[in-house]
Image (cartoon, rainbow, N blue to C red; front, side, top):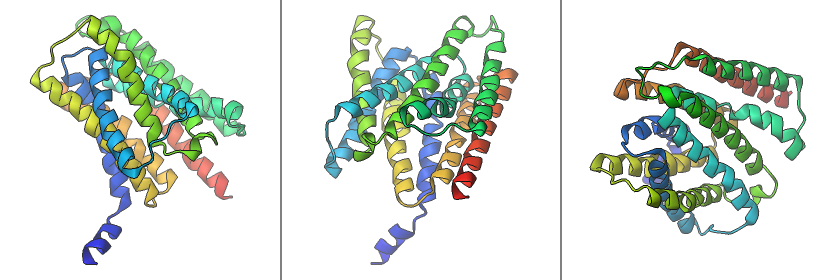
Length: 294
């Protein structure tokens, strides 16, 4: 009985925080691999699919639905473009551009979910677009190994944000609410494996021991376990607002880990643009919550 009580009193907010901290290490471990984006994407998705698949199988919630598969396509595209962005631009650019997702939610939700578009939504979108434009003011440094592909990487980061926004919109669709959201994570990673395998077989790379460790960590911990901890913490009572604000630790810490261990320094424009985007979205989240209460 005493052990059971301790389990029940374990703060669920720590589960959410741990999940977010694991998410924030994605850029670092992608950078640490010598493998190209396609190989990293395949390996990470394979380990993630196994991890989440075991959880769903134990829960006996494995089901098939074409709408979930459709939603999973956006999740797969989110992960794939994020890995590609990390390999071709700075980690800061990749994560900040991915975190523009809420502005696409504000844009698409009125059309798909029939939600009302408010003036504060319009202002938030405009501010975020202004912050986003600063990423493209960065002049490539010829001495930087990412210089040649930095704009391509930034575009991949933008696409990742759009796909993440659409993924969240369809995840809130009435048809998706009938199923465990972990199903979309499972199917999304399986889709990645399916599409990446032919590409990887055409241009095989032999992974080193460090590559295997990094890729397995990304799939098992940074994707699989992190997602399960986050959702379990929310299910145990963490408010959606608190969880979403804690979630913004990820884009703030992601480039910090990369700077500490890889010595990759984001540009001043990227830092300013990222802070504008994150601040605008946090402010909008708080105001929306207050309006719903009133």
